[in-house]
Structure formats: C-alpha cells, structure tokens
Image (cartoon, rainbow, N blue to C red; front, side):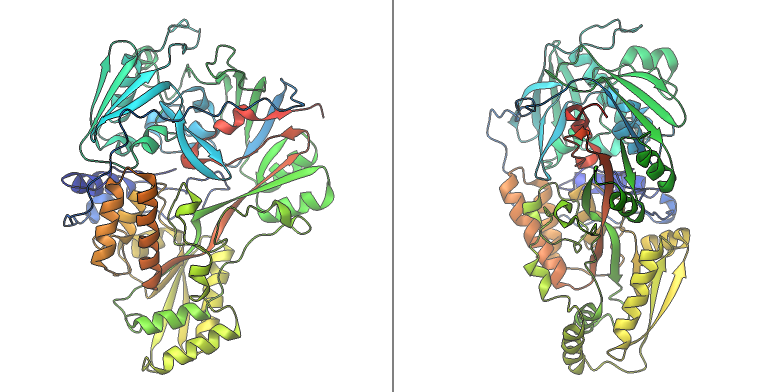
Amino acid sequence: MCVESAIAGRSSSRKYLITGLLLAALIVVVQCSNGDPEPTAAVATATSTPAPIPTATPGPTATPFATPTTIPSPTVAPAPENLERGGILRFAIPEGSPHNDPHLTVSTALVSWGAGQAYSRLFKFETTSSNSIVVCDLCESWEQSAPLTFKIVLRDDVFWDKKAPLHGRALTAQDVVYSLNRQATPGYPNAALLANITEFTAVGEREVVIRLDSPDSEILEKLADTHTRIVPREVVEANGDLRRGPTLGTGPWIVNEVLQDATRLLVNEDYYGEGFPYLDGIEIQVTPSSSVRAAGVRTKIIDVAQLDFDHANFALDRFEELQYVGVENPAAGIEIAMNINRSPMDNPAVREAMMLTWPVGKRFVIPGRDEIVDTSNPNPGIGLGLPLLNTSWMLEASKFSHVFGYGQHGIDQANTLLATASLKPTDNIIIKVGEFGQLYIDQANQMAEGLAAVGIRAEVERVSTRVFGDEVWTMGDYDIMVGAPPPISSTTSYLFSVHHSEGPWNTTGYSNPEIDRLIEAQAREYDAAKRGEILLEIQQLILDGSHRFIASTRTTHWVFWDYVHDFEPFTPRGDTDFLTKVWVTPK
C-alpha cells in the first residue's frame, strides 16, 4: 500500500503536505514492493499531528518538455525465439485485496496482483535493467502544450469487456475523465495522487486535457501509478461502487473468478497490446504462510511464489530446476535515524563516529547462486531510503565507503573522531527499535555493541509497531531509532515529508536550507537529466548530515520453475505489466 501526494511548489506546496501527508497518517501501511509484506507501524490520526507548512523557497524555473512531445511507446520487441503461447501461470502471494474497487483502497494487492489488472491506465511503466520509463498504455500520444497543460490522445482500438452493461463498446475520453475525477474525489484513498491536477477535460471522443496547479516533475508517474485505473461509469452507477465487482475493464486480462483467497484471470482476446499476453490466464493464490507457499512450489502445485529468504534458500538447495530472482528495494528495509536535538547526537563528529561503528549493508545471497543476485543497485544493501525509478539517480557505492567503517578499521576511525568531540563518559543513549522482525532487533543490538567498543553506553529498548508509529514516526521521541522507513513510493513525497526541514516525518530535527531549496526545485523540474543532478546533490547533502539512512535494504525473493520464462518482477509503483510477457512450456 502506498501513499502519494501532489508536488510542492508555489501555492501547491501547502496542499501537497496537508493533503497527501495527512492522508498518509491515517493509514496502516506497507511498502510498495511485491515482497512479503514490509513490517509497518500503526500511525496516529491526522488530527493529532497537523502537518507544518514550509516556507516557499525560490528554485530554478521549470524546464518544460519540448513541444510537441510524444511519450515513448512500449518497446516492440520480437517474440522470444522458442515462444510457446498458452498455458496457465499459477503463483502465490502473501497478501490479498480487501475488496475489488481500485479507487477505494491503497492496497497494491488488488491492482498489482489481483482482479484490478483487468483495468488499464493512461500510462504504464516499462523497465530495462531495473530502470523505469513511462510509456503509453491507453494513450496514443501526448504533448505538453504549456508548463501546466497536457494534451493526451487516446488509442482508437480500445474496447471494454463484452459483458453487460458495457457490451464491448469503445473506450472514450469521457470514460477517462470520469474515472480520474472519481479517483480524485476528496476523501478517496488515492485522491492525493491527482491532487495537483485542477482539471480533467474531454475534447471529443479521443482527447483528454489535464491542467495542473503547479509544475510537477512526477505527473506522468502519477498517471502511470498502478492505482490510477480507468473504470467504467455504468458499472459504478449500477452498483454504487466496485467493491463487489463485477470487474470489467479494457486491460490484458478478463476476470473469470474472484474468491477470498484466489483470483483467476483469462487472456483478453481483444486486448489492444498486439500479441500480448502470451499466457491463456493467471491463477493467483493468496497464501499468507511462506512455508505453505514453498510447499506449493516444491510439489509444483504453484509455478511461482514469493518466499522469505530461508524458504527460498531451502527450495533452491534441493531442486536445480528452480530459478530465482531477487528484487532489491532501496526505499525499504532497516532504517536508522538519530535525533540531533539530543546529546550527544547533536555533535556532528559524534554522529559520524557512531556510523563508523555500525554493521550495515548486509545482503541476502543464495549460496552457489551469487550470479542471480540483482546488481543494478550501485550501493547494494545501503541507501538513503529514496524511492527512485532510475538507478543513475542513486549515489554510487564510493560515496558511502568513507561513512561506514566495517570492523576494526571503523572502530579506530571512530575513536579518532571522538577524541576531538569531548564526549562525556556519562552520556547514555537509548536505541529504540520497533518489533518489525528479528533482523531489526539484531541490528539494534549490534549497534549497541559497536558503540560500546568506543566507550559509548547504549541500551536497546524494544517497542511494538504501534508504539513505534506513535512515538517515533509521529512524535520523534527517540535518541536513535531502528525500524521500517515511512511507506512512501514517490521521490518528491518522500523528500518533502522526511527531509524537508518542516516535513511531518522529519523527526531527526536535521535542517538544511539548501536541502529545502533543492527539494522544491526537483519537484518542479521536468527535465529528467537536470532533475537527476539535483537528486544526487540532495542525497549527498543528506549523507553529509550523518543522521538518517537505510542500513540494509529489503530484497523480495521470487522462486519459480524453469518452465516459466521471462519472469522479471520489477514493479515500479506497483506496475505488474511484465506478467503479459511471461510464458510457459509444458512441465
């Protein structure tokens, strides 16, 4: 489940924080990746912690896209040489959907792994080597006619499901406008995604005009977000909502059956994506237990499954025919933060020394299968928590090498720093760790041991996830915290809420006017290359502050049999369009 908000900039910076971030505070959330559910904290209601309003800081003028501009179309790649069409892919996931209305849930289970895949979007993501670009889905082309105006032309070969009340009629611009307006309804869970859009207008049958409140570097990402689905007015009006279905869309799959613990989808023979999907259908089994999912794979009842590391390792060790892919999420994992309003963390040299003593960067490696570990992340295992679509926007590993000491060398460096910091031996620190799992507890204990090695006394205090949400995420009541990072999938949303000096989740107390200025600048920068440069500069300044980082990023472990081909589960903002390119050969 993901929470988004509109960008900050000019007057919309206030709307951005108030609308998006207060909405986030109402939800019990999990990270937006397709791994086992990320441990999450329950967060206090919005009324208890009103979001502060940042002072607008002048930034670079937005660079509009060239006019006219057309978005890249999905790559037209030749079909695999040995492609065998047909077959049913059976896979198991840990979490199901609460209901079937994509506009009334922030869960990605429905739209990424469930019946919601039957709905299309205006745009979608295409991934190459884990980098993601936005391409057309329902659109044929688009242009930015002004910094705040986008004109989108729809395809002319898109048709709704043939079932009543739609009877296979053509998609229209009015359908798109109705659906986006519905999603943007105040109070709806995914309304914040579209909060910076002031108007949706249908021009004729095939053109949609979108007008923004302020420049938004992530507008296309928001329209491609897996929650931004186009749904039929007739079905909503007939039933009041889509919670109980029927799910009738224009996407690659047609819903055959939806049960509490299973969803069955069949290929849409009239799908506009030429030649896709390759499969006849998908059967999705909701199985909370990793051990049960692993047993399903071992017996070939299940073809593909998400597993925890131990179960994946166990299965791979026993069956050579099993394949593995690990997808690393740089925005999820074990987060460490220091409250610089408390002694001795208020001393930058002390913070730097502490980081030199801490074990970080632990990676899961499947024995004997090192070559299958994803290496697209330039600083594997360590990060700053930013959800970035492009790995070239991430700091290189060399930028982190001098910050963490790794063993005795780090201890020696820390002692040298502390000798100049006048640290009093009476200083006592509490490391508050949320009960998100044993890895988090182990990290906190190892940190206390590292500090003890340089003469700093530290105690580990374990708290429930609810207490962690209240005391850490909301109140900032900690010396040092270890837990899950805030659940935000948008780069801009994360930066404003966590690293802007007045962000509601900036609980470390760290403030840097230059970081504030750059955060606001990147939110308005349409040029991807320029925005990437700004983001790299922001990350370097955050790292220089020595106050908040991800000590061990989270990896999603997928195991599947060798008769399953082209299974590449990179899912930017929950996009699972890759399933249309998966194919199988007989078992």
